[in-house]
Length: 280
Image 1 (tube, one colour):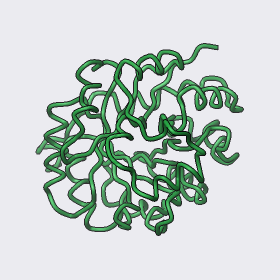
Image 2 (tube, rainbow, N blue to C red):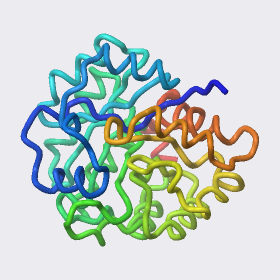
Image 3 (cartoon, rainbow, N blue to C red):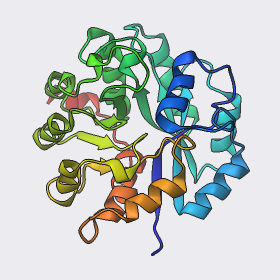
Image 4 (cartoon, rainbow, N blue to C red):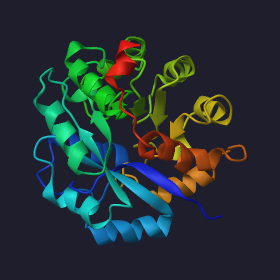
């Protein structure tokens, strides 16, 4: 059966610099990666791999500070196929937030991204506030990693419950939890039921290992809330899409998971709030 997909987490610059020790450990202990794990991907190569797997669009990770020139080639050469997620460190300052805004004006940016374990800062911390306010101003979704991280670093900062107060304080903010929510899937699901603007992407999770409670949620109240992502090439397009096709999903849910939910959340028209809206 033919499929269409949007992959919400794709890496193309893993070979640009010497990987930190924790990533080497993740490669060896979690993903059993080979020698090509830490290599750059060329634009033409990525498009060929996307076409072979049925991936219509890829969201490529770039940094807010000095984004990779190599990564920026993808959006330049294939603007209809490649977009960007801009990683912003939660420092509490405005510098990276301004870099995010500038990139959003000049490049096909469809989301901001934050990784709490990188600074051991939970997403309810005041350091995240400039990012949230700017994303609301730009009507730009933000991806926030949840679940215990693979590297041997403190992981409590990525418990989904930290998003509870964030969703209350910033109801306009569109949030997508990333890299699953293990071992706190039940909390993540309950929060998505509670908050209209909270979603989850399955990046870095092979679909065959998604828990039964998430599959049930996808088939029922969460059919519009769960988005496909691979973390390619850590997990390949073809493996993840083949395993997604094998999931026990009700009619129409697979296309929502692989394509429709990401198209709506990340590629729909952005409508930044006006000053009149704020006054009302």
